[in-house]
Image (cartoon, rainbow, N blue to C red; front, side):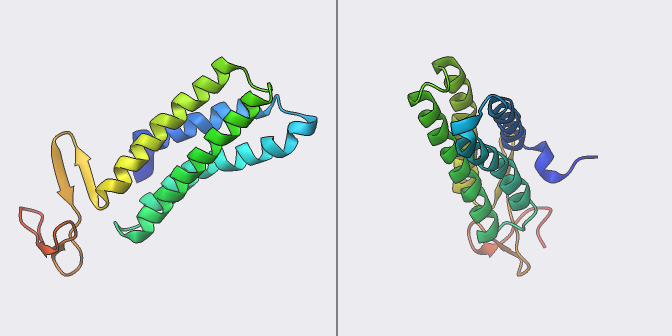
Length: 147
């Protein structure tokens, strides 16, 4: 049995990045400890905020959690830039982490832009609120699932 967020590609990518970051952080010691701690927190924040946001009805709350996840992904990118510039992280490792982050940010951006829509293939579903209005258009919903 899966929770809703576990079926999302963006969640899987976020968990993959957190695992990748965890492995990187095992190598950071001494002077790099504060950066290590920040990378661990920010990388976990991506997946945690996606999961929490997906537990909300389509609303501003969901968008806020997805925006926080996106901000955490960008923060991780900045941390990787700093580690690379300081010669703590080589270019290939930084590129691998950044590739994951670019994918995550792209998916989150699309989710935020689409707001209350869920897409399966070419079919788009809008969220119908308790008043029976399509949240996307503010009009009465149509179709077999309309309330």
